[in-house]
Length: 265
Image 1 (cartoon, rainbow, N blue to C red):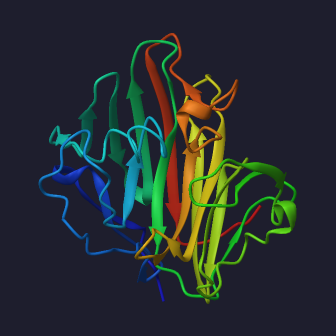
Image 2 (cartoon, helix red, strand yellow; image 1 turned 90 degrees about the vertical axis):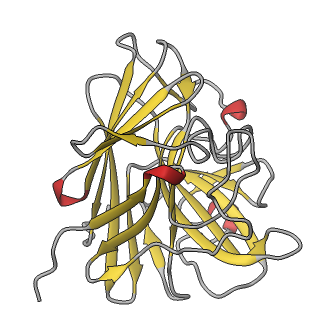
Image 3 (cartoon, rainbow, N blue to C red; image 1 turned 180 degrees about the horizontal axis):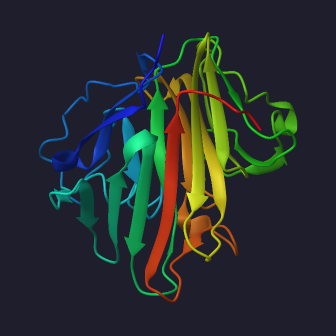
């Protein structure tokens, strides 16, 4: 059977969220009926988790929670490029053929930020994720705590490459890698992150493994694989080299490529 290229659907009017990622003959994004909806939110409101893929920028955790783009309407230019303007930066993305998404963040030179394609995936209990063996990993053992350091796939003895059944835990991790491969039975999905241009940026893959441990008092299951610029969830915790930075040109550029296969590292 011939499988076509990935198909991405977004919702510019409601934070630019990806509402569908169809690849390899299946839908990959998990969606949640939000308790209060997304239609009436504005900057500064508490985050409303609707699932899908959120464009988290300039932070993931912290202030504002899940960044400053999810609560704003995005606009299109008629050519397939969608943009959002926030107080200190503007972000645009263009979805290309073959599952490529090109990004440009415009801001004053030296502006530091974290960006994550916060993809919540609809995965079975047998799903696994492959990343480079021995990659430096920051493990966040609790949903809202600080990190400890270790190596992939089991930093501090915590096995992270298997999602598994619900066990009441919720943890996160940031792995120094630019490519991740997800296996769910016979299905495959890969994310590859590249910086465009000569200006280096820290590239990572973040993981969110909520197996019914978050939030209190009504936890649910949600599992994420999140290509990231930066090495921390909270921009306020970023040390030297932990955040992306806008170069002298005033524009940071990168590309996310999604495919329905895995040439695993």
